[in-house]
Image (tube, rainbow, N blue to C red):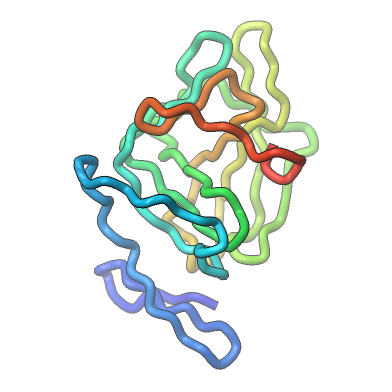
Length: 169
């Protein structure tokens, strides 16, 4: 269970009999060196972090999404996921996937999207949470993409590589 403590975007995470305070921190300055991260150091339940790095998604020679206002979701043993605000996504290239719903125990019901650029169809290549659970309301309608299903995904110009296996294709 999660609830907001104040309009300053602080959260109280309640899990069994423990409470964790976790502010949605300000983005780290782009000039500040970022230390290496380990997915085993990420918390559970997942936390949200604003990220001002340039997140860019390309498909079939077109930029599908680009932002400096992403929200990163960090969860134990999961690769970080960048969610892009809808106003920074070319939504005219997104179409509801035929088999298109999943459920996350923390974030709620998600919808899959096909990315279609010209004749290139990337089925179930993106997802979003139209009405996330209360603790994850900042993700409402933000879009995340599977890097393996796009031609190119970068964070500040660095190529994103998909995790091996089928977890996050």
